[in-house]
Image 1 (tube, rainbow, N blue to C red):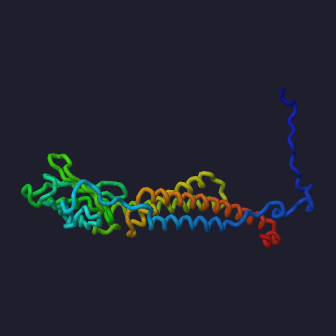
Image 2 (cartoon, one colour):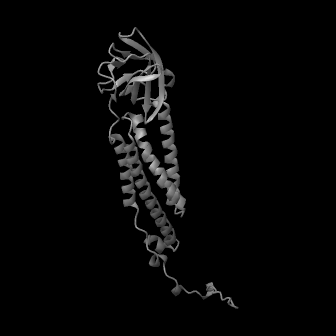
Image 3 (cartoon, one colour):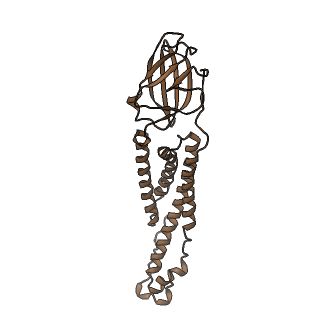
Length: 286
């Protein structure tokens, strides 16, 4: 059954309001607590993500494979020793096979960075069977895709089939700053920082936009994940997956607390404007 009469409460006429009916806003609205502590904790978490990226968790895979000691050398370094093998990608890489190495007609060299194996080249082996032989693998056309410490693999091929292989740690002599991964990492970090600043500015101004908090959390996690790659550009070893995941977690935590801090700071700004609008007394109270 519908009501036959709708009653609406009318507002109070301004002429009927007296000064005794009014109370200062600061007496009925509590000031939000300061955001300084949240800001400090968020900064500590963000710095911790970069510190963890510099130290790293775990280590790149060590030398492993089917080759025996001294059977294969890359740039005169035994790939089974476990030491860093220096590689100059601007010239063909010399892969030497001893007389005891498996009989092969081609050698293949693969270079991996940050888990991506985008550099690969194959070269024929020259020299008589049963004698020391050599293959010149030219990866110069792809030298801008990798740099610094790398995970490398050499495969001995015969008739297209692998007859021996070894994975080892290598180090490129080229500058990291001139590679595509370094340029992409720096550009991505600048984009993420600009996006995070935009989200923080919205929250800091007191805007109640839930999407700003969510985007700040996601972007902060991405900044943490990019931190190991940035440190690699500056000279550290390439990160492993566990380091990237841990840094992303710290970045997400920093973004979460940063969003709380920005929203709290925005509420304090609104409170100050509200109190300041009451007049000199309210302004002094703020």
